[in-house]
Length: 78
Image 1 (tube, helix red, strand yellow):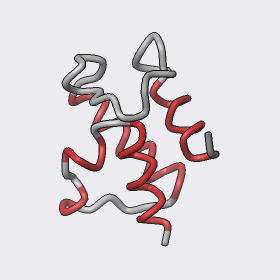
Image 2: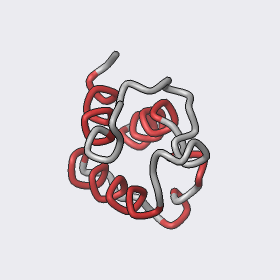
Image 3: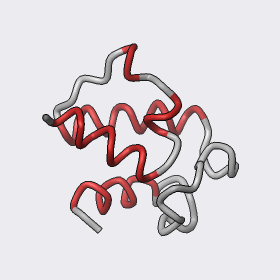
């Protein structure tokens, strides 16, 4: 597990009882998180990584799983 994934899972732990879910699990479809979590996640990403999340970035595919979030952050950091 890399540093980004560790931080994302730590953040996720504020919203779910077991943040060690499978990295590819769709958090929304599984009913683990909701739209309030999504808004908090965007704020977390912007503050923690200094990344501006644009309207174009607000795609479900970017935020649906731990791995999707890690990939999004990694790409935006380049």
